[in-house]
Amino acid sequence: MRTFINVEDIGPLEKALAEAQEIKNDRFKYQHLGKNKTLMMIFFNNSLRTRLSTQKAAMNLGMNVIVLDVNAGAWKLETERGVIMDGDKSEHLLEAIPVMGCYCDMIGVRSFAGLTDREYDYAETVLNQFIKYSGKPVFAMETATVHPLQAFADLITIEEYKKVERPKVVLTWAPHCRALPQAVPNSFAQWMNAADVDFVITHPEGYELDPKFVGNARVEYDQKKAFEGADFIYAKNWSNPGVTNPADYGKITSKDMSWTVDTEHMSWTNNGKFMHCLPVRRGLIVTDDVIESANSIVIPEAANREISCSVVIKRMLESL
Image (tube, rainbow, N blue to C red; front, side):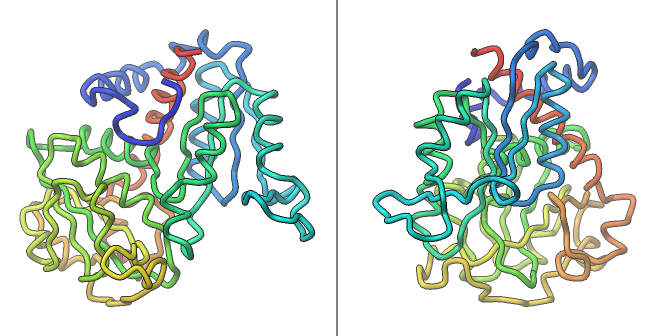
């Protein structure tokens, strides 16, 4: 495996889930694969779970790890071609990337959407430059449009907590005070479509995700109807994807607080489990009583980030 961006990259999900369980049973079983190998983690944006879980996974697999915060200690990087670099950006990404490739065997990249130019974001401009110019295997630690390590961990968690063979899983939009990218809901939708679940997406009208991620999911604009009989509720905010109106891309076009997941919302479910990728804004996305309830599985979900990343890095090490 040379790249990990979309669900197709991981291959058959049954095999990936079995591998995840194997690693969870013995996290150091494959240490020999990473001996004398180096992972470079490139962060254009802040991170807590992704940084810690990815570094831990690489160390479990015997790797050395280099972490570069582009915005803290490195030269400011230009990403556009054909520009006159007479501003505050001292180095171009097209020189920086192959240099980074000289110092490692594998690269993880984290770069968020700018939320101003939909075409630029959805072209995955930054990530694709790393794939093209680094000469190394590259995996996404969240990009402008996807967060596959999170979605894989979400699937592992659902597999562990499901009580029926084909659970009902609901991705629900919730309000937020800031404009957030669509990467997490995009990947969650992509992975749930590939899994054996009854998948429903619910959000206010106008917040439709890109059709290539929605896939065969049922879209329900009535949140209560969507929640009925659900086994898992995955709450997440996303800014307007600009699908129905491109001028709205990246904007907050709804702050409807009736979409906040509270005890009443969860009462509509089949004693459903509450999920969120974290960090979460309490009182906006979810109320204290829900996220602190016995049915909240946000912490085991976060812990599984180490496992999902371990599977991905192991697969990449095996391909070197």
